[in-house]
Image 1 (cartoon, rainbow, N blue to C red):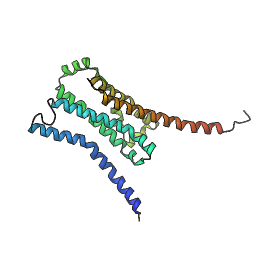
Image 2 (image 1 turned 135 degrees about the vertical axis):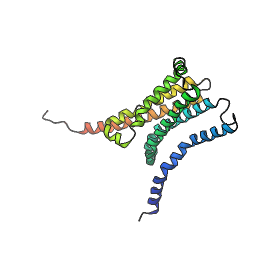
Image 3 (image 1 turned 30 degrees about the horizontal axis):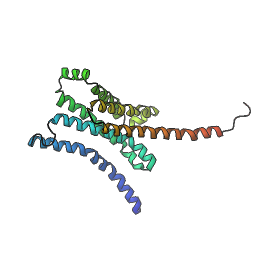
Length: 224
């Protein structure tokens, strides 16, 4: 029979994903309730411009969850929170879903699916191009996030999924160009991204040094 500690670990493993999924869904649940309230009392939940509020809400949380996805591996590596690795794919898919809804909300609520207006926005507002390219870079990552694709792609899977870094950078550029005043939020996100990239570089350098040490310890063949 399993001991008390072992049973707790099993319970944590079973509950971790549902709890994380619920937490990641909270911004969307809040938005759904705000939209419902907006129909009852216009202007009370989403402000003077509900469409713009919906678009920004989805984009903000999509970018936050994207940074959270990047933070899972460093947190596991530095603090030993190995169970977090089980939530990395789900968190990334939530981020992609929020950002996809962000784009869809822009097309429907702000542009009205008007092709002429969309083309005009693309020429006058470069931040839309940056955001679109970021979402485009995330699309193959979402498609190939399953274990089946990981087996098919082998080593190329990791190379492909490094696209998350330029995609996040494009998301930050999108936010920077979109921000009219007060760059505090952008600065916080940028610092987080820089720290996450730096942590990976240090971990990569640390993994190379032992390998070089083992290679130099091998005696040379005197016959050569």
